[in-house]
Image (cartoon, rainbow, N blue to C red):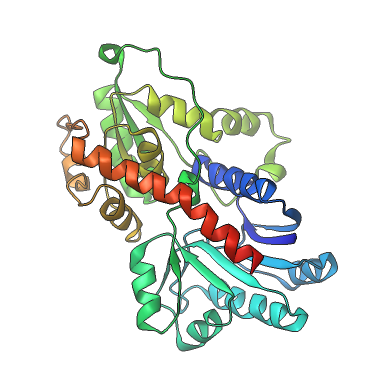
Length: 320
């Protein structure tokens, strides 16, 4: 099947986005599909992109929700995407699918357009409940970053030699607090967005400094190795949490700019006991990252198993 992918995040300077895209490409390849068109992650699906989509003549159109199909009143690109893609699919009589999405707080027009999609896969159960209330069927599938097991060699660093790892946050004020904490505690600090995450790597690659930054910080395997070799992680990132789950590394989280961290914690660990406030970081005292309990470990393993088995349901949706 010839596939068009809307919102390809492989050129976004962010290790979580890079891992998601790598897994999407792997899934398409292993499922025997040919990716013949992709549009870069963008705030707006332009007429130029639509023209390119027309020329490519796909058999299936995928919208990678990138966690962000919500709040249409303040985000006109959401309304545009949810209108243009089903219009195109209806015109050419081909299926269109939304996947890896958080969906919430949409207007009546956007909800009507969602009903025109062949299938919808959301990455949290809150989105699934929201859609159900609005008479829209969807399936829950955890974030695509955990769709495949991490393929890393076992760590050879003795546990007593490891230190905490701290990540940034999508909230800039939280990043400042997390960075200050990391400096005070002499912890390893990871920027999930070492540069503006909306800048495309392909456009910046000619700059030597940017190449160094992106090769060191944006590579998901590098980030995974750093976290694997830690004694625990304090993260302000949704994908920081996903990486910890994938590796089964002890962690605590602070909230993000949406409910995504809280939802993922509830669905993976089973509760919010590992959610801390930014004030606990701000006071400067060391933050304890407790080891995973047997119950937490079992819940995380079940979450990962479900994520990886969900690829079969997505594959079935592709074949219609």
